[in-house]
Image (cartoon, rainbow, N blue to C red; front, side, top):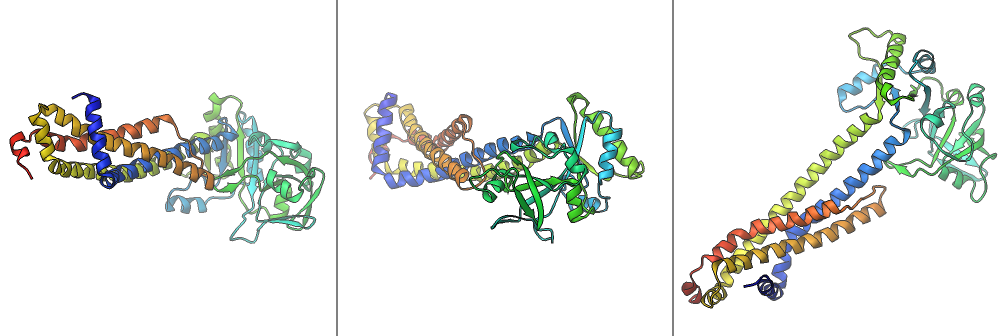
Length: 412
């Protein structure tokens, strides 16, 4: 029999048993849908997060008290460290020769603390915004782009000027349809003049980057005190000297904090690579777990296909005997049942791909998580489903091909 003759027989069998065919496909559909959805979301998140992390540039690093906390022991150690201060920042500026630009910032807490930040203009009040106290070069180091007005100046920081740069959405909500620059806002009842509006950055890790306000670090410390540790950010012009610059900054701060040789630094240095590696390790673990769940669904789907095909062999024993009596060879019978199994699984794979792509798009549309559907996972999903079908159909196909035509024709 030719391929198309076998295909015609297979399709007739499918039409005759629609419900059984659908139930056979279900396991493969669930498995492939899960694979495509997870891969699309993970790939989209990887692009999104890595893009957000690298926004500040790969030639910068951050020094802070806590760093990346992944255990209770690390948290306990970090809690014993001293706060980083403006004097620490100035020491790095003065004594780190390879640190071309050194700035800093601190952030007011917005929950579970008294320092909840509200911004008001006229009758409009925006609650629980994220308020940063920054140095004048923070915008340059962190690549903060101002679409209207300008960023804070060194004079404003040195003289504690009540100036503020607003996030895009915050400016839009406080001053709809008018230019915010030059207007005045009240931050926790303290009057500030708007000198600039940041470009729109969107949401990162469920945090809206456009509902923020950035004021001079000196003003921030007058409002909230100097007891909170600051974050020191360093930018290096020559990427090849990044490690040396970190070592210089480390020596400066260890010396200021009187750290002994056997002591830890008393602070953490974070680079773009550190954050990317942390994210990739997390996403790889989540990806592996979800793929494991999807694999179980595919295995179950394969077992269902094999059982249904075995039942089909028993039901169609007279048909198999008749075809053999009319000249069909064992390999024709094997091909028929193998092709039937592969088509079943591949059909389930196609449906799973469509459902997975739809689910990924819905997740992307209804949540901050982006999705990225690429050709590679689609082809891999279809091939995986086909392989499951091929393996599941091998034993039923062999069993059908081994039937004795005389015994098969005598079966009721």
